[in-house]
Image (cartoon, rainbow, N blue to C red):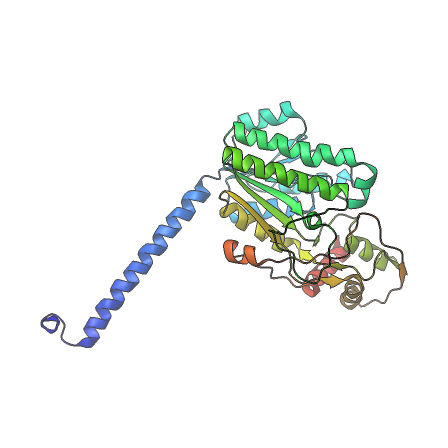
Length: 358
């Protein structure tokens, strides 16, 4: 009977193909509508620590991507390193469309309550923290205040003002000291941290899980693995090595055999944005390169990209430092459709070029 309608099989195949194509287009349209509906809710995003190293890159990207109508930077300009660098970034960032700066400290309850009550953000990306493993050994209470109390205060505000998304910048340091003979997975048990900095990050994660379970907040924890790139903090290894290299000074190595999973800042920013889009319930992701590199190999690569030879001074392993990190990024690949794209060689070349022009 079908041949009374269609003259031959080619007509049948054409009709079938059109029907399948229509179904695919309908499904893609439905997915787009769901995605757009999610993003449409993000009229305002609060980024704590937005004047910092990762924060400034993230805010620039958010302004370009259109993921939000407005990005509100909250930053106390903590003097861990020169606040003038952060002020310079803020001068640039606030010239971009949709970015504003709210000068305040996340520990100031009255200030933060006023901000949330007035602005009613749809997401909080919490990057603000006191960094640095070694300083945490000397001033552990400072880290409890900033990294634990500050985080809980923001969680309380999100609960009170029904903020649907909360992203937290954690650290590979929560995995503690372990042999880096395999990648570290998010669900690993028995985490034994070795510094107050790592302990404060892990304690904050516990509070985050508690709030997600108790109050139904959508909370995503992102464990960053040794982030580097332009505008990196001056105390971090790659910045310090490049500074010594350009001055003709020997490079100071504390543990030449140690391994780090170096991750370029642009890859981290893409991971944050992917997590923002896919925020739902409680989630934890490693964001790393998935490729551990020894300190000796890092020095060799720096010599390669700079075209300069250097000498080294080897010191002992420092208290609080771990011997290796290695990210298993399969969860972020599968659930966020994210993967790093900048190799260490390429990232160091970009960093070196930036350093020459800064």
